[in-house]
Image (cartoon, rainbow over all chains, first blue to last red; front, side):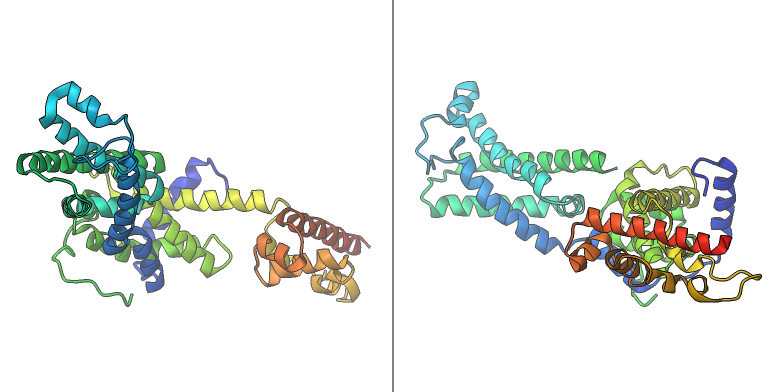
Amino acid sequence: MNFGNKDEWLNELVEFSKLPKSEAPARVLKGLQTRLFPNPWVVFGKIAILHGLVGFFSLAICEQFGLNPFQTTQSLTVWFMSLAGHNLCMVLCGMFFMATTYLLANVVLTLEELESIKRHEWLQTGVVCLTSLAAFAFFGAELVGTFVLLWLVGAVSGGLLSIEVSYRLRRELAA
Amino acid sequence: MTTHRPQTGLDSQSDEELMDLYRRGDSMAKTAFQLIFERYGGRVLMFLSRRVPNSRLAEDLTQEVFFKLHRSKHLYNSTLPFSPWLFSIARSVMLDHLKRRDLEDPVGDASNFDKFPTTTESQPATGLNSEPSLALGRLPEAQSEAIRLRVYENETFDEIALRLSTSPDNARQLFSRGIKKLRSLLKNKEDL
C-alpha cells in the first residue's frame, strides 16, 4: 500500500462506496456502545466519590458555611469576603466547591464519561449540590436561607461552567 | 444485527442529519450512532477485511474506526457528505495499524509466514525446503518457539515474553533473528 498516493485513495473511496450494504457482528456494536456510552449511574458514582474527597480537602483552603475541619487560618473565604462582601463570597465559595471537583474529574474520567456527565449536567450538578448542603448540615454548618440560595447559585453555575470547560478541553486534546 | 433499538422515526433521516443529532450529544445521540453503525458498520468491516489478515483484527479495527469517529464528531461539517469522511477515518485507522505493525514487526508480515516458498517446480519437495515448519527445527529453540507462538498461536510479544521468561524486547529480537535465519535457510536451499 502506498501511503500518500492520491489515485489509490480515490480508487479505494470508489471501492468503499460500491461495497454492498451488510451487517457487522452485533458484538462490535455492543463493544462500542459500552465504550462510548458509559452507564450514567456508574459515572455519577465516580463523581460522588470524587466530590466527597475533593470537597473535603477543598475545605482546607476554602471553608464552607464556617466548616473548617483542618483549622486553617488562611482561607479563600476571607479573601472573597474582603473582595466583594458576604453575598458574593457565598456565590464564589459555592462556585469553588463544585468547580474543583469537575476540573479534577477531567484528569480522572475518560472523555466519554465526561460526555455522559454533560448529557445529564443539570441533574448531576443539582444532586451533588443538594447532597453537599445536606452533608454540611449534618456536620453542623449553620445554613441560613439567603446564603444557601446564593451558595446554590454559585455551586450550580460553577459546576455547569467547569463541566463545559473540562469537556471542551478534553475533546480538543483527544481529537 | 441482533441488537434491537427503539423505533424513533430516525430511519428516514439522511446520514448527515443523523450525524447532526449524534454531535448534539443529547438523548437521541445513542440511537443516531446505532443507526449510523447499522448503515456503515458492515461496509467498513468489509473494506478492512480485504486488507488485514484475519477477521478478528478487522473487527477490532472497525471498532477503532467508529471510536475515532466518535472522538472527532465535533469536527464533522454536515454540509459535506458523510460517507467520504467516514472512509477517510477508516483508511487512516488502517494505515496507522500498518505503520504500527511495521514498527513492531520490521522483518515483514508474520502472517505471510505460511506463504514462504516451500517447493519449486524443478525441485522435489524434500527435506528442509519442503515445509518452513521443518526448517524451524534447525533454529535455536528459543527462536523457533518465538516464531511458533507469534505465527501459529498469534500471540503478542508481551505474551511470548511471559512464556519464554524474558522481556518483550528480547522476545521481539528472538522472533526477528529467527525469521532472518529462516529466510536465509530457505533461500540457500532454493539456490542449490
